[in-house]
Structure formats: C-alpha cells, structure tokens
Length: 466
Ligand code: C2E
Ligand code: MG
Ligand code: MG
Image (cartoon, rainbow, N blue to C red; front, side):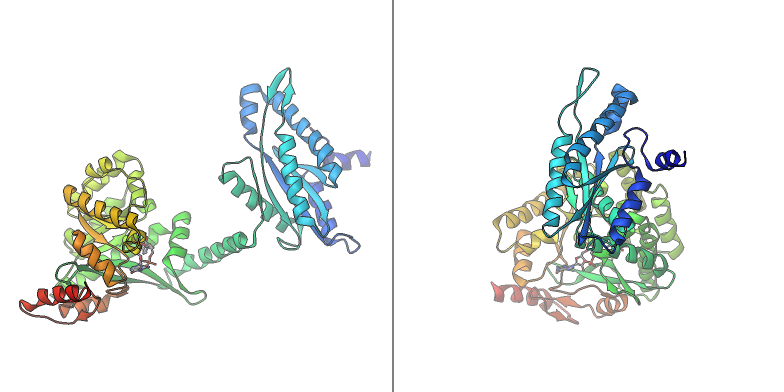
C-alpha cells in the first residue's frame, strides 16, 4: 500500500508519466551520481502550443486525449533514444538524457525529431487535430550543475522560443544567460542608485547650422555606480523601462533640467531651451502633464524653455490619448520634439495631426550620409518634408565636417553630435552660454565673437573644406 501511495505522489494521473517532482528527483540524482557514465546531462522542456484552443473549442476531454497521445509519442520516440520522459505541467513535458561526446548535437536532433512527431495529426472522436510545440534545451555543466539551474535555463530558452512565434526550439546560450544575469544585477543596483545620488544629468549642446551658436541642449542621464562603474544609458534605460523605475528616474531628470533652467534665469544668464527624453511608460501616465505643469510652476520656469523628446513608439500608441496629451502640453507652451525620427513607422498623416515642433533625424542616417545614397536621399527627404510641415529639423550624431556640410546644404537648421561636443556637465554649458561660444562647421569652437565677422567665419570654415 505504501508503494501505491509513493507511486501516486510521483506519477502524473492522466498520462502515467513521472510528474514534476519525480523528474526533478531523478534529474538531481543523475547529476550528482558519482558513478554516472555520461559526462553531461541534457534536458528538453517541451510546451504544447496553445493547448487551450483545443480545450476551449473541443472540450477538456479532447484536450486530455491529445495529452495522452503526446505522452505516448514521446515515450515511443524520445524514450527509444534513451530519454526519460515526464509531464511537469499541464501542457509541459520534460525529456532528460545522459549525453556522451556528441551530446549536444544528439540532443538537438532529439528536440527536432520530437517536434516533428508531435506535429503529426491526432485523431480524437473522429476529429483531426493538429498541435505544435515549443521547446527550450539546456545541458550540464554549461547551463548549471543542478536540476533547478538546468530547468531555469531551459525555461528561459523556451520563453524565447515562444516570443519568436512558437513551433520551434531554442538552445540555451551562455550570452543570453549572461545578459539575464547582468539585467538582474543592474536592476538591483538601480533600486538604490537614485537615493544614493548616483545619477547625473549631462547636457549635449545643439548648434545652429548657420551661426554655430548654442540653440539648445539635450539632457542625457549618466550613472556612476560605485559597484558597477559607469553604466551607459543604452544598458540601464531599457531595464528601467521594463521595471517601471523609469517613472521615478524620468521624473528626477525632468525636475533637474527644469531646476537648471531656473538657476540660469535667476543668475540673469542667457538661457536656451533644454530637451529632456521621455519614455513611453512615463508619457502614458495620466498624471504626466499635471506633473510637468507643477514642476515648471514650482521652479518658476517658462514652459517654452522645456522641450520634451518623445519617440515614434509613443506616437504610435493610442492615437487619441496621445493627441490629447500633446495638445495640453502645447497649450501650456512646452515644446515637443520627435526623437530618432526615421527608425519607426509613424506616417506623415499622423505627424501632421500632432502638435510637434521639431524632428530629430536619427543618427543612423546621419552616419551614412556621405557614402550611402539611400541615407542621403532619406535625410534630404526628411528635411524637405519638415519644412513643408513647419517642423524644425535637428540632425543627431554629427561626427564629421563632411556630414555637417551635407546637412547645412540640405537645409537642416540645427546640428548635434560629437563633432561639436559630447554631453557635458550643466556648468560647462552655462559657461559656454555666458561666453557666447560658437562652433565652426569643422567642429572647432570659438569662445567669443563679436560683430558681423562671426557668420563669415562660419562660412569660411565651410568653404575651406568644400
Ligand atoms: P537619444 O535621445 O537619441 O540621445 C542621443 C544619444 O546619442 C546619446 O547617447 C548621445 O550621447 C549620443 N550621441 C550624441 N552625439 C553623438 C555622435 O556624434 N555620435 C554618436 N555615435 N553618438 C552620439 P546616450 O547618452 O548614451 O543615450 C542613449 C539613449 O538613452 C538616448 O538616445 C535616450 O533614448 C536614452 N536616454 C538618455 N537619457 C535619458 C533620460 O533622461 N530619459 C530617458 N527616458 N531616456 C534617456
Ligand atoms: Mg533624445
Ligand atoms: Mg535620438
């Protein structure tokens, strides 16, 4: 009787296969067995795609029969190739196989054959049913040394298979899991970084294409983590967006930039509008506009000094809400800039209906402007279109004098890029503004100019190069 109980605890009732618990135990045993003859153990976690469709349309009875048949096919095919087969969830199965020298190739072949076998027709109550499966594959010791680690890595690979559209299998990869581990560490550190004052806003000048003066600056976040070193926005912003932390971070950036303008105003300095990047997550919050209005009021800053950079992904969201919010910002007097233009799919028709002031040509097009006819044509077209629609155009990522020249000749009004300056601390921008700094189109900077010679200087630099 005790045996019967034990069997119940370890067996899946429907299919008679070992259940999750039993599979974990035997996997752990296999991994820790000092007498094991195989140097590695491979596992395949299989998920039947959209089994709930079968359940919903034909009933659970039919779904159950499909699962029983799946179990039989797995036993017949994978079992024959030395795999232990178990059912570890409603629509999830596990194959475990000791591997020898050719191990991973063999494991991959098993995953492929299994998917093929499971995709064949099922007949239940005279009805033909077809299902597919997604699978994640991992193996010891690369992916881990115990059952939990191997299953975790296989699950990760399975999720990627599902994201890629199902009906496929994905192998565990070192880089992918290193990437995941990196995300976890960055996420943990970021939770404290704001209180610990580890973030800083730097500002990259935007330069007028005709006279080389600073016409604005873009606030860009910098993170110095004492533990991880300097972390690039491209690494932490996507994580902050996924975890929702961007709301607090973004709010901090907005308030800091607004405070900066306020302090310039108080000091009686020449000020230029500051641009702040806004993520879709921030923009979607109902409080967004009110918060900005409050922050401007608190700091006593004219709304026209603030520019918000949004991306096409924001514009593509629920069109009516977006238009409403943008119109409220417009009424306030805040300016709107469309960042990374050309990388998304917004249409001209959409843009025309939105109160946008400025378009920033994405740096990927600027980069290739001098040696790729397509990029050049595209930049010209964006500039021409923007003139028609009365948007200002800023070119981002200008690195060479050749690029600057092309853009100026094409009619682009403002330039931003390493040719002029990377993002610098606010204080430096403040000094440049106080000194009336201006740039030549070859990227050199003059601290101060006076009188009419200024513009000629700029032209002269342009002419010399051409
Ligand atoms: P972005 O808004 O398109 O910002 C421009 C990026 O291009 C910045 O990178 C800037 O340093 C870089 N860049 C400027 N000139 C050049 C150049 O000549 N050549 C090249 N190769 N790159 C140039 P950064 O600072 O690493 O920021 C990357 C992205 O992170 C930004 O792209 C923006 O999407 C995001 N980001 C930065 N700060 C914030 C923030 O405060 N809030 C939000 N939501 N996103 C931010
Ligand atoms: Mg930007
Ligand atoms: Mg950009």
